[in-house]
Length: 485
Ligand code: UTP
Image (cartoon, rainbow, N blue to C red):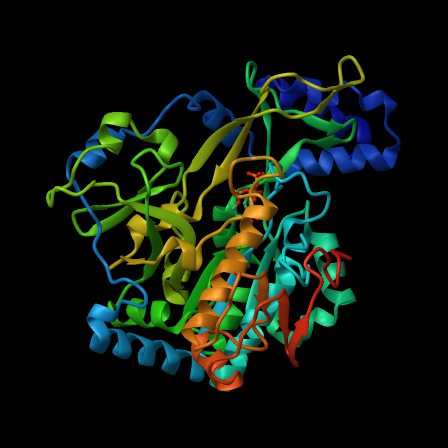
């Protein structure tokens, strides 16, 4: 088709959807840029965008869902009261790791807008003393887990067009932190953002739509499309340990969690923490019949949030922390359910290019509607789904906010990391007088048992110390050894 015909076709088509403004700056564009714009239009499902925008005010009838809800019950990690069952779960998970039947999936495609870091969040130098990045810390956890069980663990790492190039470059510059061919990087899809008052698709530049990553739920389609899921299946991987890039406290591929999941015959299991107050801003995991659901805090009427369950304790005690174990076969099955994951709507402030006035607009208030899929919407589709409870101070300290916020800031996360390391040292029979800042590389020890093998009982750590792969190094508390680069 000639360029003028294509333009005419698109003018007509866009008019049908009231999106004609997308071609308003056409005459300013070079042939190359016109081509780029047409290609991005080609990728948009205009019917879907219209439907999503028109339904944006619709909230699923949470009341109906919760009328029959009960509190989810499940095992607690490291529960001393249940030692025999716990031992069985750990052994089952260890067996899966030894047999190469587990792999990790790390989602790192988000914009990290609250943190305000100018690189992908995974590059943030979070190590309390080492200043190692989130990516390096996770890579070391995965390497160490593989070493422990004599079988390297594959990692599927999801980026988005926003974070892809820099993430790939970062891993290559650091020799993939030792993960080699076990690292599979794949990129998620995007969705156009629309103007909140008109439903018109926003533009980033004269030749580009304003696209944002399609949510962590985009993982489902992207891991398929990339071929990584099929590859895992062929290599005999059956269980995927899914986690998010902002939580360095997490024990990645914890055999106990994987073991409880396998023993329950679950297709998708989720790690939860007990909420401190009913109105905590986390997703709420509830049981409805034989299914688990996650209800967002923003969708939850206050009277339901504070309602007691059948046992008199708060019904909604279980806070979701974005850590799941999923069966590979389950993901293959639900990928065919087109509507398995609904889109959620978020109102955000977004700078955009106005093609009609040829200007960049910096709005003062939220102006854009974004559409995102959430991975936890898969849970109701899973057979035998279970929750596993973790202690918050042991498994959850997410890096979300820039310094100055009340919690989830770099300082908050580093404090939690150091506190966990001190606890592990004490459990290993060491002393930490004065609570110095300590950091333990996963390549030195993954847990207190490994620490007890490497450090004599009674070892005193009284000043800031980084336990690197080769051993303890005293560090000046103010300084790190390495930056984000
Ligand atoms: P959040 O929803 O907390 O978003 O992501 P974020 O990008 O980290 O931060 P804000 O909200 O912009 O401040 C939770 C996890 O999901 C991943 C993120 O990278 C993070 O690991 N995620 C989020 C994706 O991989 N893709 C997305 O489209 C959204």
